[in-house]
Image (cartoon, rainbow, N blue to C red; front, top):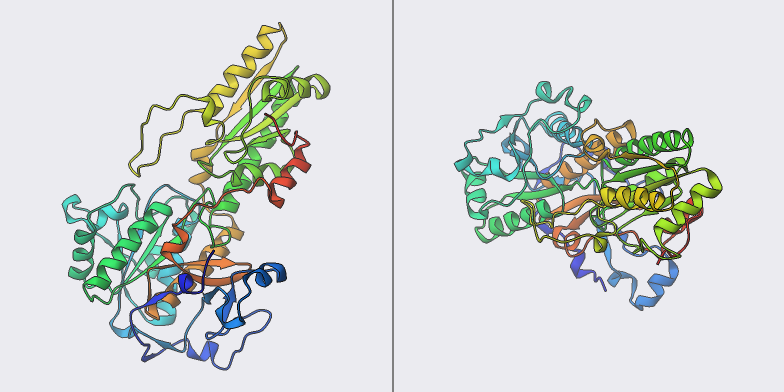
Length: 439
């Protein structure tokens, strides 16, 4: 059970420098739309959850609020900032980079911002990747394209070498935009800097297209991803409806969490079955997927399935291979379903027209949609405020519409999943009318 102590954010020291943004927040107090600097945001959101803890108000677990401070740890006139993007691509990366640079430049007067290229590899001189000077002119239009202008990579680098590089280049604040593994790397960087008594703030902007990082609300790029995936589901349904015994299958990203599959299916209500890693299913038998697909085609004339890439791995061989980040390489559940469904119809001498869509790399490389762009900007602004105030070893997020600071160890201690007992999966079951259990 989480405690108040686990949610405390590290700081490099007392804030002594007046903030250029003090005029923005001076005299503001907590209200329905704003959280004061000295207030905190409760971890629990129901009376029953709070009652179960049996704690006095001041001991309830809560998050530090995000936003500008009256005073800063760093003197803006003497700050040098580094930005790095790590891991796989995601809509909104360039939006975050742009917003970081513009906030630093326009509101704090920080003009020395460099971008380290190709992830943490750019912080290791052995790779020969010279950083890029990031100016308002350079980043002005980068949000109009997908990907990241800084490039990315997977895999860790020697943390001592990384901190050596930061110190040699005089970096005061490092903004890390990346996923779970990248945040673990950021934690090691922050810890090593603290052990050296180096005043380097490390602030994370968590990025995961799968939306599987806990305690940060929705991750940026996720809304763009599921809306693009919903377009593929619509296409699959159109193809399936136009055919005799048409079956459309859409495989979406979701290594361990089925959020994209769930939200993209709910966006259009075009899916008949949604298969996710959190909910096991059988292929064979009277209650298996094959039987239900055949029944749906028989009664409706077509069927549409949405499957997360990590679903049904128990039905596939595991060769033990891993990627550069140490993640197990997934076997192709989409190919298996295609083979098994077509073979099932053939075994009964029944016609089937199968259409397979795999939009994975497409949906992660497109520019962010406007709603995501707004979110990216606000996350970046919150990250800049935290870094200038000397916060370190933390990420920014939005919990129930309030921006918060979360210690990195607390967002990396477990993954975020779709709960089979939660209201999201219940909504999927209601939308698809698929069986509650297919085992």
